[in-house]
Length: 377
Image (cartoon, rainbow, N blue to C red; front, side, top):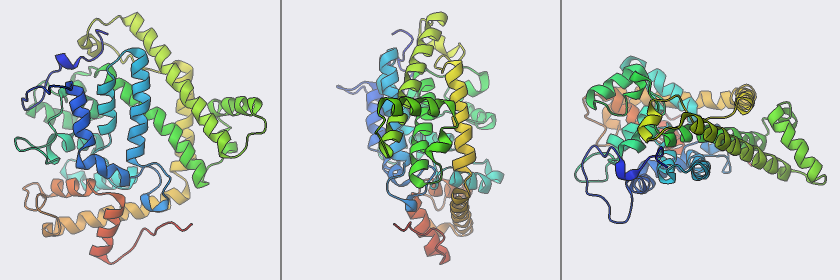
């Protein structure tokens, strides 16, 4: 469709390259992301539950794959560019620290006097600067549209810095309040859908929340009652899986239906028209309300559960200790990080690139303390 992103009309790469003979610009971006070092590290970077707590909980890798799957399914129905959606989805968490949001919060606090730490901006730093794979340039040299989608959030101060280095680049929309592409908007919502579903699954698996607790919410309760009415003898995890499957499908179809209605009403003629309009990829009012209720439930009952906060408190101590150690002695970091003029940012880059288990091992090596013990079965 004319309002989808066309790789042939891409705004291009920061460093000019000849087109690939068999792949579009967005397919090439996706392939570069999949082959990057930062992408491989996602398998040992975790979400709510830390890497040492169990093998079956989601990681940043599995989350990114789930976002890509959901995103492509919705994009196909709306006739958007599936390859761009997949590239954004696979790259959107490349800048996340070890230990999930706890690690991000701790590193942001450590960097408060040096510009702070934003994981979305770090994801852009990874693909623009930190990956070292090509002889002619730093980073992966991705197309503008993929980079724009990766930068989901950005503070005004950091957007101004980006705009000063790259006029009318990926930071501009945070200053003029325009919208990104439909594909980027879609990835934002697919990210939210994936989070809610897999945190329900992981939360029940952990024993920290129960199906009965979840049934206090209209969205979950309705599908649970529907499943048990259709399969009265179904028990155990099959019930939960079927409820989650239906919950996911309902959210996907709601996005497709309401986004198509918004597109039909707004009638954008080009992808640039989309940028001048309010966000068009959306839930309906009822689904938005129910999704928000689910997020509030997970925040209160899972993310702030005493067992989770105890573990994340230990993880944050690991980040703080590592930051202090590397700031005091940059020689503790490998070549490429040591010796940089912006030492604290180099420290943040190094720590943000760590996996959970590498950060825990490094902390034990440097301090002699073991704060994060492997889970016992």
